[in-house]
Amino acid sequence: MSGRSRGRKSSRAKNRGKGRAKARVRPAPDDAPRDPDPSQISRSQLGRKRRKRGMQGSMDTLENVQLKLENMNAQADRAYLRLSRKFGQLRLQHLERRNHLIQNIPGFWGQAFQNHPQLASFLNSQEKEVLSYLNSLEVEELGLARLGYKIKFYFDRNPYFQNKVLIKEYGCGPSGQVVSRSTPIQWLPGHDLQSLSQGNPENNRSFFGWFSNHSSIESDKIVEIINEELWPNPLQFYLLSEGARVEKGKEKEGRQGPGKQPVETAQPGTYTAVERMVLGPHVSIT
Image (cartoon, rainbow, N blue to C red; front, side, top):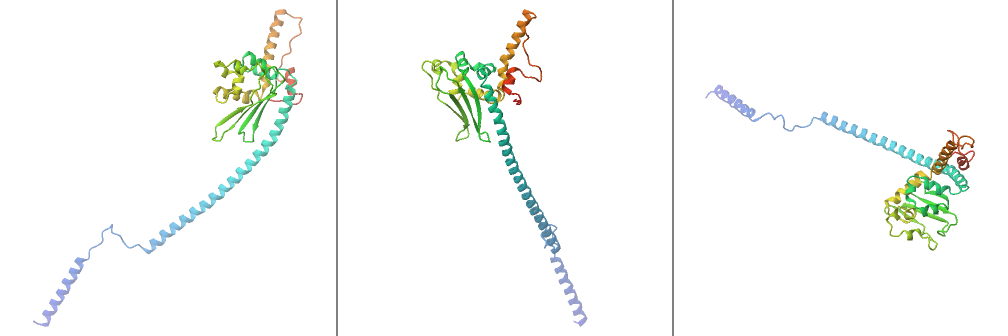
């Protein structure tokens, strides 16, 4: 074999080897994992760092805003307490003056109780007589947060019981429920209205039945009326009876004709004699 023939065979063998090598190398599929691009790694990390810094900045700002809100709430609470004390003292002065003036009007509170359309339904004839000795009523709130209150009934000497003051108190119990307690009534012999009405289902709807009862729904209704209607403005209920007397006087005058002194009635923006007695010359209580 000549040298030229051997050269051609060697060249063909090399070409066949290259072809087999090319056949063994296959392109990778599109979804095959690829080595990450270094430039892409740096951009991704940079984005995460920026987001982390942005979130941390928002958290810091949020904490500062929350702190300012808490400080503002604390300032508002302190301001509220100061205003509550200030106006509580001013209100107390007017209430004391009102109470002093009411004591100069015999039977004021008893009449106000009887004239209230809902309270009147809880009073029997004997209780109306007992309340005619009521000379003062006080509703005392317990604490600035108004967690409870006391209702105090002050009585003149009377033939029914020895107590000069009867107190019913409402407050929160250990588990958060509303509880009440009241002064034991020291009834005089033969005048215990609760014993006399023992067994009467209407006893729970009586005034003294309410006073000694600590579980009735009616009890809650009475204290709500006293606390929210009668105590804030007893004058309006007392004047219901005076208004009725004025109307009767006008009817009587109409039947008898002229010649009688006209009954004084209150004009808008003015006060009757009773209102002037209770309110005083310079104080207006609503």
